[in-house]
Image 1: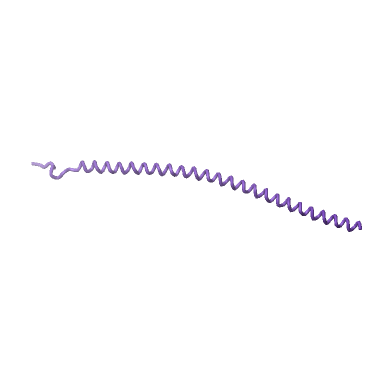
Image 2: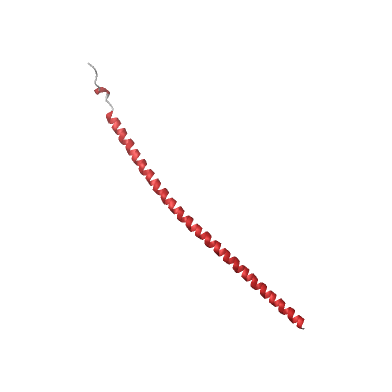
Length: 97
């Protein structure tokens, strides 16, 4: 009888220990996944900040390019109008006597 009782107690103890070990294993896996998720979330937030900064820099550069383009177009129009006003009219040309 003692042998049967000890065997049953060992079996129950083993099953209980196995359940505790599985729970600990699951808990460990969850903590590992949580830490990985936190790290990836942190990297994503950092990447979003970098992307926003690059986007703002790109927008400033494009605005500057458009401003320069308008200045060049205005300069070209002004030089074209000056060139037209400086052209000599054939009827008013100076001719030798």
